[in-house]
Image 1 (cartoon, helix red, strand yellow):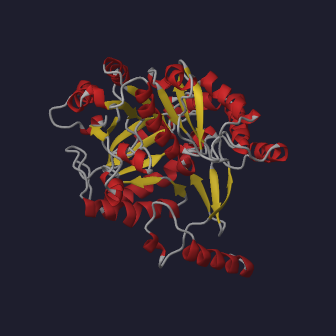
Image 2 (cartoon, one colour):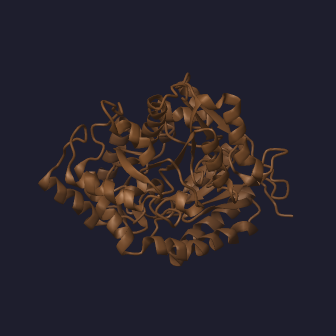
Image 3 (tube, one colour):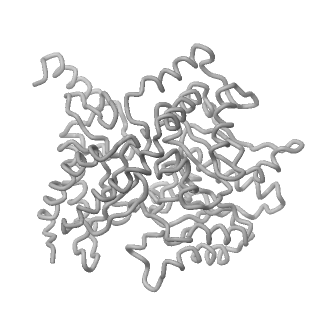
Length: 461
């Protein structure tokens, strides 16, 4: 039981949170008559709230605390850097940590991705990549190449430029009209292929869209290695190789949006390496520091950099805090942990165990599909497993927000119950997790999903 002092502190925090803190992507009215979840401490794969309740962080906070919570050594790298140089900008200047980090990223990135433009986060990285693609084409004599092809239900960020690539209607509508140029094609959810479409058609749809728009108007194609929104949607075999061919045929840049999929999430440094394709640009963030400091980056090929290295050409873009010395120092320490402690090997070794645990839940009638890669997996929930019938909007609201989100948290598991597409449960644990942690996740997932099946009257046949 909480002490009087703890109770007073809890009440004060709740009052201040509800009065002053504007939460992101959150229905603020939901907290009119209930507490805001306040997380105060983390260690390894677990976090604790202000009441002392312990939770398994099955989402790595938001797909980003790759090395786990509580690594004081990584945070200390930022503090040590502050004593030497707390801040200086990358606007016409450099400092050692940004140089060292850029070189290290270039050495890890696939192919000739040797130029690193830092940002403060993932949305900024996507925004920067889209602007880079446009200006590159202008400098190379093709000023009409401004459009970007993305996939339906894909999330690429919320700045107005990135939002034009994001393919989620509910995120776009409140802010329309958007930056022009974003066009969309079907995603690779092979569990729900559009009528008459085969897996081989999914890549070809990108080529058809480029041809429809006019190749001389399309600057880039932006794709996640594994698509987040819609529930960890993986590519069919050969998909990215064919997309690469299509982009080359039409002089269109291929942007691999790896804000989530890089830094070990899929068992490789970059998702492009997992699926064997060479992008022109990689966007990244989150796991680059394991979220111990805010940082993102655009990693561009030597070819894209060339026009900017001559005469008076300038990439007319930047952010004050991009490449921040403390964030760069934290990123370097984070990469040390990933390399020295075998984090990638841990994901490769135990991905089958995570997947087997999730596959074992298929005996629950509401579980229709299991998909994903590495430590980035999802369950799609259905009304009827044989027909794949999904829930309508009202049913999805009842299932996800009315029950699953709160009940999973109440039982000690943080994961994502999402309906930016068909209803899914996403799990993305810290990359240090293993079979014992997966068993802990199952101990919450199984009874909660069984109860969800009963509540939604979903029965097996």
